[in-house]
Image (cartoon, rainbow over all chains, first blue to last red):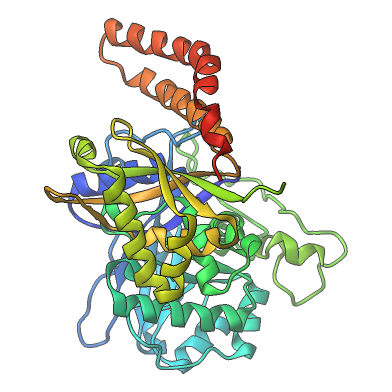
Length: 283
Length: 163
């Protein structure tokens, strides 16, 4: 049994609802979940980036994951709905508060930019509308090379028949573009009733054109590699990582941790080894 | 003789209000599954679902249900199950979702898994107990499921021979 993760639970201010969602996720066997905050930046209105609520505020006691003895891990994630490239400010310190950073591009140009330039982890694909652009192979391949993942969320499909058509259509075209690699399937659930068990999701992915193996990876190992990717984003090119030590010496810097450099293929100019999937390292 | 092969899905019905589970019956679940398959996969799905589909077992206390599907099309039919959001009973509509726990080739393997799973659930309950009395009850229940296991199997073996 592998470790299942659901990297998208919609944040709601209602505390009891949030608690119920996390409880249900643990009951279904997800060992890591990420609470998602959506943010739509615009130039006219100066809005502040939402700051993540500490996990203690969301839930009293972390439930034990089904079939394991450890409590569930709760992360934070920010999704930026981009309508213009300038809205993405790469060096914003607020972004560093989140464990995962996702963008949802709305135009083809932005999709291209997100795949090739932006320092993010996840490219989210809108599931509630017909996509205004096609997925092109070239930017998708660059994104795969950089270790980004494309996200498909299934909750919209459960809610309503029209959404279901859009979701399946968008997902199929995405899967065809990236040949089933680096597709992340998450829930985007707002209510505990909208979550589904991991094995159901894996089988559901067959509707989207993923094979069984790819589908299983989309809820387990791709999530794991994404979390590692997110960590390297915070560190300098994945070579040096700094930690805030809460002890008596706050100034002391952590010793540089050299990450796994994947012997043999660390050619110059390619992304650090830790940023890529394990399978890509071996082939 | 070659026997007709089926797949048995062990599903758990998750509801918010556990009391509403008692209202469920086999027919309501079968109707809900048929309806959702027809909605997702159209006439082809409905045809596949009418072949050898049946609800083999339902435990209204724990919300466990065994579904039998023909082996050739169980993946297709299973892919429709996540879209179930509610089950209509005679009295009211119960919002719920199905969570598939195990897929087996015979009812017997499913039953073995179910017993193991239920024991696991009892273990999960143990740390949440409020007082000593409850703890003792659950400990007894855990011990008893390992003893009854043998007797239980004999009783249900006959079911397996069905096509």
